[in-house]
Amino acid sequence: MELVNLDYDEFAERYPKQLSGGQQQRVGVARALIDEPDILLMDEPFSALDPITREQLQDELIRIHDELHKTIIFVTHDIDEAIKIGDRIAVMQNGSIAQLATPEDILKNPANEFVEQFVGSNRLWKTPDMLTARDIMETDFPVINQDKNIAQAIELMKIHKTPFLCVADKGPKNHIKLFGILGRNRLYGQDSKAKIKDIMKTDFKPINPDTSLTDVMNERQENQITYNPVIDKDGYLLGLITDTSILNVLHDIMPGKEDY
Image (cartoon, rainbow, N blue to C red; front, side, top):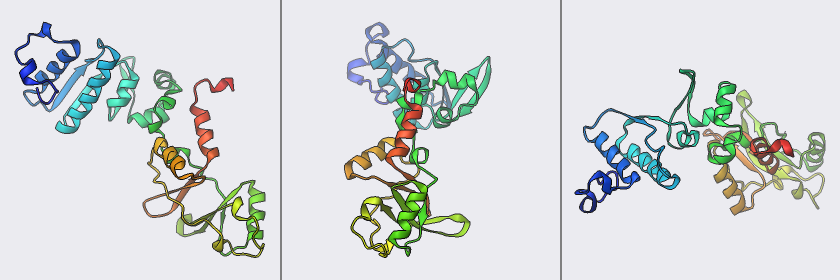
């Protein structure tokens, strides 16, 4: 009873008819767990509950799973529920598995048109935490050596029609080691022969490629950041997050984008 958040002194002596629907479901979960099964099958357990109670029990189930590490097969027709509680989702089509994958992979890479329609084309808009820095970064960005001068940087910006350059060196297997970011604003009032390494921005904060879109946006807002380099575990540059790259991704997943 403690595991499913039912106070023993208050509920132990009650009959089922004296419990709410949500409390009855908690008892059902406790009853299923009492013999410590290896696998728990739950067939649409929350479908008859009101939305608030349903969300509360979803949170409780996630907590119980984290505590007990049981394998749970959870049947639901609600894709939002599946995405919230599932580690892996099997989308069924005519009695067969159309796709078996993580929630993130199903959202981003539906296996066929059926899965795409079932999930919904705008689902990512509702679950921004499924989008990561890897999904929103630009990978086609100009690179300049730190020993080049401002005149060369301006010329490169013109060629690529960009307001920024990544100051970096390309190493083995084209791995890019980032030293700084050079934005157009840092060129004003500088001698055209000045070295880039003397004026580039070096106090940038790298972003892990698995950082969620929500956390990226919070970081950018709190620190007034314009360019976020995305760095892998070995310290190499994978991409760059800019206002444009974020807007492009949001446009792709925005509901009703075809009207714009």
